Amino acid sequence: MGRRYARSMRCDRRISILAAALLLTACGSSDGAPLDGGAPLRFERDPEAVALMKNDPCWRREKGAWHSSVGHCREMSPSKRMTGVFVLTFEERSFFPNKTAIPDANDPLRFTHEIELDYDAVGKYAPASAASENGDAFLLTFIGRRTRDPYSVDCQGLPQYTTVVDRLISARYIGPMGPFDVERLKALPTTVSVRHDGRLGELEAEAVKRCSGRRSASSN
Image 1: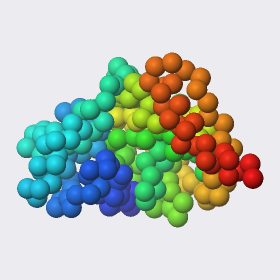
Image 2 (image 1 turned 90 degrees about the horizontal axis):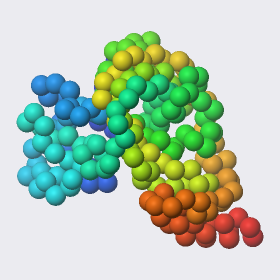
Image 3 (image 1 turned 90 degrees about the vertical axis):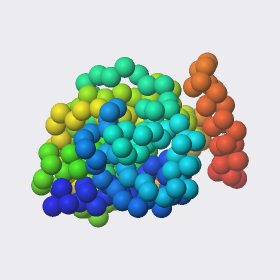
């Protein structure tokens, strides 16, 4: 069940804005794992889509197929052994580094860390998983890399990263997620401020500007 679920979800995973606009003619592995980890290679035969991919640094040809990864276009931290909880829902691939139990469905950290990996591989390691109504949680151990800098900062000042799994060591299904309350997330106070220098400080300043209207609205 878990393997079939992971395979069906793979084609629905969130990818780059460019990829979301493309009509993917097929989805799956080619003659092996991607050279730099992450999700399996994706086939694309549409000439217009291929032309767009050639101009996107996050996409490149590997083993005769196109592969999209932040590892192609972002500075990454050194590869190391990691453990954490992977949350899989219809439109979500969240990761909780260093966690070992099912996260609170409304934990503010839930959407601050994305992960790229082979979802079929998770299904093979965790055959007892089920497509639960609110999503499923898996305990992962792997060799991987995280983006060196966050790609955004949210209105609470939490930096948002992506981790690329280079080699999955183990995966275990730990249970279904609880119900998610989107209104609770929307009600979180705006607490972001500029606390750092460098790229993180720039993202914090952007978040302060972006979230200022929300702060005003919540104070009325």
